Image (cartoon, rainbow, N blue to C red; front, side, top):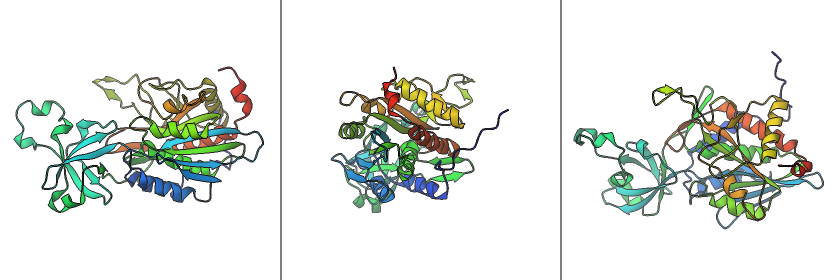
Length: 362
């Protein structure tokens, strides 16, 4: 067996500093439409590492790192800051609040989950009728969200108001090779973009979009792409790992991605047919440098590339994602190695980009 050559020394790595950043990002509350906590972290982290930084009308953070080479490609990198969560819609008094989901929440997992509500991160719990009081047949179906309430207790009620966002109270932790935390979709991508800005290849003009409102319709990325008008785009996200060994009492022979398989390069999803030139470029980069990767099998779901590729006259786009289990629940599980290899693959793919790539036939 041929040994895999070591990656070039300039390859950015995941260390203590990067892990601490991911922990801070994961623990922050940034439900779609109220991304301020993550936005503040991003602005602090990229200060001094970009030539231009602005926050647009929707709240996207747009950063530009200029190239040192002439006639450089303008490459947009996107990662969304928002997460799925809840919005308070009615005060039922005595610390009980009716809520609605923001984004695609798995309602089966909600009863008993702890949450943080509003700007003051008021602690609460999602309450349902206790099992002792349920009637025959009630436990066989998932409880409708309309029957659930967020309970913040009598003392917390005065700090919560209609319109406040709420998110899971899960705290990030690293256990051996694994990462556990909420909102790793897409704080893994946000942390990756921050590192790429800090280690930007000099051959491309890097247009970094830390976008808002992805979970409710890819809204921020569309606005960001229109403003940037890039030559091509890469969306860096997290994708569901459909890799449990047993599924519906049969062996799992169909999957989208697997933990430990490296970054997932998208071929197609519900919103995008990825540009084949960019798919080939990413795969060839991984093969040349010995960076493990996998192809995300076609299927549902999608990333901000679904909005970006249709802006203006069209933007050649592809998605690269870190696989993770249990997406859109209180806790995702991912692997550090998959995250580090995603960072390495995107970095070297950027460093190897030449303008002639877009002159090739699709």
